[in-house]
Image (cartoon, rainbow, N blue to C red):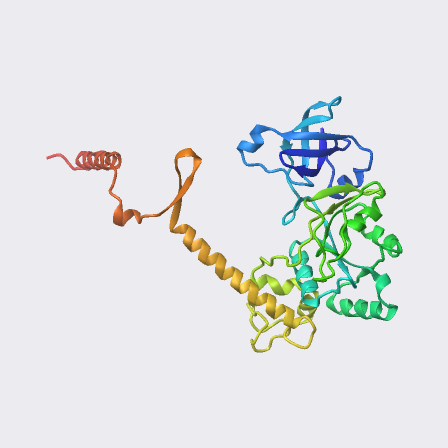
Length: 363
């Protein structure tokens, strides 16, 4: 039987069963409707031996179902179409980035960092601004115009007043969506509004720090009433940027638009001080780009140093399952040829001599 992993807790997996037919991702998400059969499953030891991890969103094959006890065993994890390691979610095709327009106020640099991180996944991105009931319409229009210049059409909602949810439903229908964003912007409250049967724990924004409190502790998928899946994720305030310097510029819609019509003089242009650069200029997020570029360069240098360090050491298994790290020795300088290898070389040499003598002309 085919199913989708909705949540992972310790070594147990809640799997929602589908109709058993392997479908494309969009149809798979659309087929997961509330009320479908659920099984609490374990992972076969064979999967553990080969190091196969099971993530939320994975499509899996179930064996030996116990319908009375609602138990089963995951026998195979089907190939993933997409995968994100933070948070660990498989087969998603859409990211819903949620920010609050007030309480807490959006920080442009933080918002830009989240957008760049979302763009780096290669998934479709929708930007949503919550708590519009706390600001005047003029401020809403100001943020909307500002984000349009960034290359995004934001969806304005108010969970308190229930406004904008019909527009948001259009973006979520039939998709497998990951909800992301900083703490305190209303991600869990959004899940509660979209799926009334779910009661996600929520918390007020810290009055002292002006930031949200973490309420979601793990990733969990929920079935939307009108088809589709949505995953609530733990909030964090500073996502990591792990792209290379050359990849960073293409994660900004403003840069992609500029490069559509013209090209920089150099193919490896980083858009800083290079001559005849078509990207460098007067656009709002250019300073954000330079800040993230410095982070990307530092990250690349750190990875290169780590790779060089790891190539100079080796890991050996010690007693009681404890691994230890030892420096690698240069084989030609320090290591002696083994006796077995010496014997093989001697036999090969003797064989070559015999062959040469056999080929010499006889008097």
